[in-house]
Image 1 (cartoon, rainbow, N blue to C red):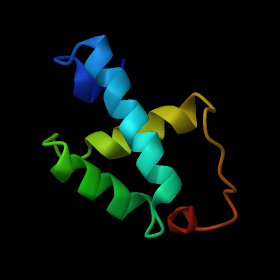
Image 2 (cartoon, rainbow, N blue to C red):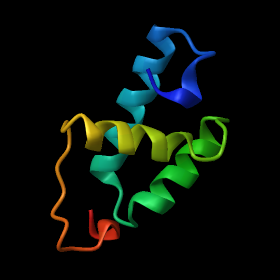
Image 3 (cartoon, rainbow, N blue to C red):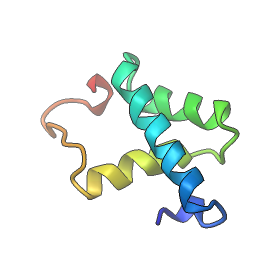
Length: 73
């Protein structure tokens, strides 16, 4: 489980992850802006959205080209 989400039950965490993934498919402004706006809109601690992104990256749920800027995602 993600460190930022120890206080949240698994169903709510799954909903948050699904919402983040859905938004990431629509976002054109990059991961930083996506994560920041996600945190604000969902009333989460700063950095929570970025934790979701890093978690998916580490678990190879998403893949990125390390030769390109991450903000181009």
